[in-house]
Image (cartoon, rainbow, N blue to C red; front, side, top):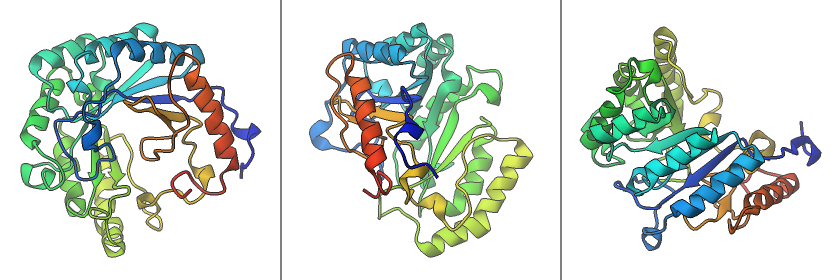
Length: 299
């Protein structure tokens, strides 16, 4: 098992998540990005361009644009174009409520639809809106994106957060969305006691519903991330920091320009102030990581 600084001496993260805005069209119960006092915080196009230019110099592999809801930002299309023009990998996380047919066509022209993930917590309004709002708007936006591609292999992926409200419906949710995309990512609720599965619910999901989901994935040749069914570890944060390289291969920049190890752990590694700030934060993250005796999440 690795425990020393040299063993994880990456020269740059592989992935940088830029949260371009706190504004959102929804108010998801489990979202870590909720803050009434920060609703107006956004990253300007000028600063965004400087950040991704530094990322390019550092040889960061991929930029993820997230939020909040990134399509609220007036310069979102220019930001996407900037990443594409620099030749960096790109991913975009959205709830799709603002994706009109025109916007979907523009995204198709930029060749990024297959790099997008749309968030759903259910396959119908009743289930989805236990934790979110506007199922019909999200579905319409998602279908607008799907209409721009030839098959489900190039469609956006679907991200599903498993909670106590939908865990029994996960096979039905997967069955619904497999008709539109072959990529689905199943994730557990983190740090939300109201929605987290109880021990009995985790056991029920793993023994009764997860095998069905895995059969669907195999039969339909689906791709994506599925929670593992071993000792409920898929539902729990890492207890040893070596199992998680947050801060090493992954960094997040918030709308206030704080730099964090990941999108859940809000432990500031510094501020982005100018080119060189990202590299400095990454070096700081490596030192912090090497001194941990438990995960970021447990520290």
